[in-house]
Length: 275
Length: 254
Picture 1 (cartoon, rainbow over the protein chains, first blue to last red):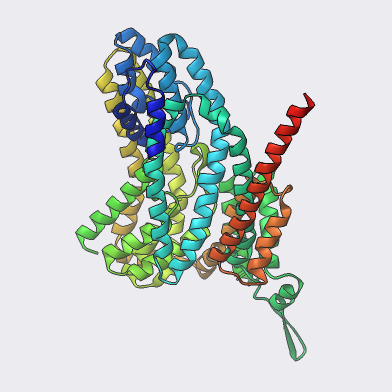
Picture 2: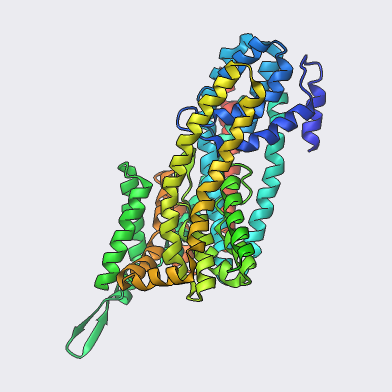
């Protein structure tokens, strides 16, 4: 990444002890990510795991080091890929200001984790796997692994980029978050348009439940499904999507919704209404 | 199934869980696990079929912010193994794999509770200035996370063909038939979650465009995604220039 190299050259006047090697190492140690997730500190154990070696280099005195560590054991949770930027910037503050910046660092981390998690969850955890998953899934059903391989290659690319985001965060500090905030909002909005088009297409393609019922009036058997199709193709999936959307809005949990669907499916299958 | 196949498949499950939460290269990619298990058992096509089916079933279902969600990739590993080794096909695989994947939620919650004890222990080491123990103890976390998938997979695939056959024979028709129907409805959950995260009310028209393209025009998913990208890019350019204009206008007023 030539940009990163340029950035670090521009910032060489900064008095810090951390080298590019230290930051890269922290980036790789952050791969611990959600593995240490717990209900109190959320990702905090992983923050400590990722930053500990860099912090040890910054704080030579044991007491300062312990104080800095305890600061990072506090609650932290955001999207793990974007966290690299935040933690890199936090290290820059730590490296420049020392332990007296403790509270600023904590405020900075807490202030950014919410909005960044929003963007990361929407684009990286929902949009990307949905688009790649639907394309790769359809190919896989037909015995074609191309989509699956493309998805893996894309994620390997992101893997390389995100482990280096620590350096970008360190070199740019807080600047990066104000600089790109406007573009990022527009980017997120545009990405959600792409998402909506795909979701609109997903409803009739992946929700494939139909109604196999038919009524016999004298000699003529009347099937229900063609009737429904003439009103609107995929009428049942559209209706179900609408109900599920409303239920989630009423704070019904995802797991509850899944169990509800399984029960309805079994009743529907037993009665021959759904198929 | 040979012993080496059981070991490899269990290992795949272990790596799946640790990757899902750590390296995140195969996150949410159920197809890859179907294909890998298929490769171990010598039937990649069935692996792709099972993986692809579960992939489409699980679209949009993501464990955001540390939430526990049904473990679809683990379901894929078990379903593929059962489908190939019993020779009874995908329906039999799903009948065993999906319920175990659902139970995976409980395993995940237990591991995250255990992680809480480890975090406190680690912080205690930090305060005692035993720094290598502080980070060392954290290596237990990924082992626990790995076991949340490895254990259910190991138990499911070693129960033996006889037990699995008995379970499948015991299952009433409404149960297996119901699961097939559930597979056709379940993607609705992901769709609803996606919609909850998107500005549906503001951009309703794009949802309709996507629906018309797929339901009436039968455009394949890649085509829909390309059209969606074009619309998104157009909006991005428009908003960006609008934003700049508004900014310049604001300057003039002052």
